[in-house]
Structure formats: C-alpha cells, structure tokens
Image 1 (cartoon, rainbow, N blue to C red):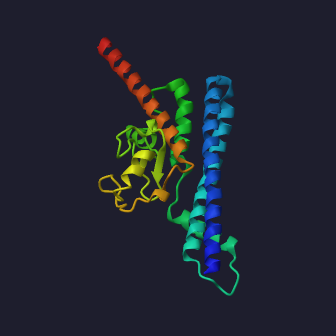
Image 2 (image 1 turned 90 degrees about the vertical axis):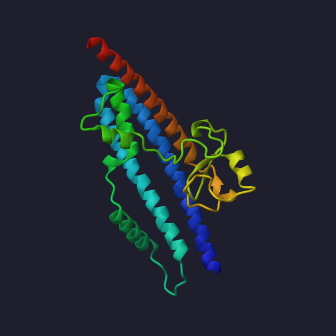
Image 3 (image 1 turned 180 degrees about the horizontal axis):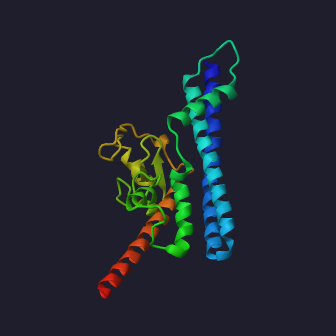
Length: 244
C-alpha cells in the first residue's frame, strides 16, 4: 500500500509539472502571435511570419505530447500493481502514448490555436474576408472553438469574461463565480447546468486551474473579434444597399 501511495503522489507531481509546462507553452503562443502580427504589418517580413508559424506548430506538438504523457502517467498510477520485476517506464510510456496517438490522430492543420494564429495574421490586411480555402462552415467551427464550456456562470448569469474570481469544476468543466458556487454547494451538490451528469460538486475540485485565466482571455479576444466582424459585415451590407 505504501508503494501505491508513493506512485500516486509521484504521478500527481509529474502531472502538475506537465500542466505548468502546457501553461507556459500557451502563454508563449500568444506572444508569438502578437509578434507575427507586428511582422505582418511590415510587408517586408513575411518570411519571419512563416518561421514563427513553424515554431507554433512545434510548440503545439510539444503541448500535445505533454497532455498525452500526463494521461499515461495517470493511467499507470490508477492501475498500478506491485511487481517483483522492475518496470521499464520509458518503454511503457512510449507504448501508451503511441496507442493514444493511433486511436485519435489529429493533424496540426485542424488545431484551433494554429487557426487563431493564421487568422490574426490574415486579418492584418484582410479583416472581414475569409482566408483562402475556407468555406463558411469551416469559419464557424474553427473560429468559435474555445476551451470554455459555458460563456456565462450557470448560477449568477454573469458572463465568464466578467467574473471576479472564476473557478472551474475539474469534473464537468463548467465555470462559475467562486463565491456564488461555494454558497450553492452548502445546500446542493448537483451541477446546476441542465443535463450535466456531474452530481457531486466538491469544493476541493472546483478550482482556478492554471489554464482557466488563459482560456478566459482567449474567449474575451474571440468575442471582440466576432464583434468587429459583425460591424464590418454591417458596413458591407450598407454599401451593397447603396450601390443597388
């Protein structure tokens, strides 16, 4: 039992380290995107923009590897059984990660963060226009993807982007205002979102995880971009009416 406890404690520590690395990668991606926009504004630096995009792809692959490694670590800790022979951890993790990649392959082209990078660069000179090769369905699906499951607090109705102390359930991933959900949990445990299977909200599992603030900031930026696109579309419609 002691060895099981040590394995689980070590697994938790390793996953926390991986999570911190993923947060750093996400922060770095935002910085790279801002630099790429500055380069794109200067028409003589298109090559640098391409190089930055290559760096984005590499960082996304590293982030994916970190996520898969965390899943493999948690899997091992959950199903750990003491053995007489030592475990070849490198081999075991490599095999589990390979299985995960084979079961759910994902092309970098479909990654929403890469899409957001390309959109930010494209909009420097082509705001309001679809990128080459896009159709309207692609734009709706990829441009509105976000890691925030709900855009308003299920209890207060306040937009997630305006919450003073946002927290997220580690189980069902819904986001709440901290003081409101803590008060709610004094008398109820079921997630307040209709249809959510989570019937056991626990205060220790409703937290402000490291990625939450980044996710909210991404949602805020996406909302502003959508508002700008709507304004551009309105002006386009006015111009069409005046010329007809």
